[in-house]
Length: 307
Image (cartoon, rainbow, N blue to C red):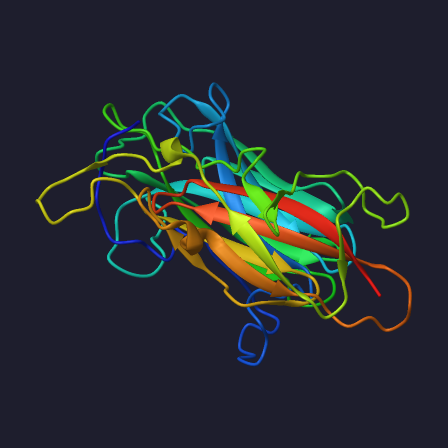
């Protein structure tokens, strides 16, 4: 495990990925996918995809996790990444020109992705973080204005901002990971499935308007060691899990997990929705886990609601 300095969780580092359309609607459930949303982002170093912090000279990829209700999301995007200094609040300004950018002008089902290489001359001591920002447009193409600023052809899209660690000589953050057995449904293993339909009968089935227990279990190795500056600092990191669904009702929007968390802290209850007719209905679930240094992972599951 890497040794890292303990610090307060940064909102930017946890991914401030907010939709400009509807983000001021306090009546909306944070866990319900009612429109196309950006839920998280993950950096993977090319030489070791489990690492989220790239060293100067290393290549990496930044992937955004986008979900849409009842369908595969169709998106276009414009993204860039630069090195930044530490700031106490808000988003940091770039210390120089972006060292990578990506543009997908036409809406596609391909993921929003930015491949980059950290320049050899980046001074990690003075600019220890990278900052990615840009625009993701759902169900719409994208165009650049005369000043180079991107805009969606229809709608306002999602402004994304994601801050993550760069690797220094003595530290390199790793991504937490959802293992194959990380999710269970009512005490039974809930594996990932490629099925996107209830017709094949291979997905778990639950009865309409019933309540069910979803459990998230992370490996002990996901809770990385922290460098303790005082005896009051935690010895290992805390991870934040965010569950989402495109139907029904989750009773928690966030779960805070530590290496010694009680088993119930990884449990969230979900109530199956009512059915409009007598036909089975597919429900998609999305899960994101984050640490405080830009490490993330995401996975999805599905089930069928039946009469």
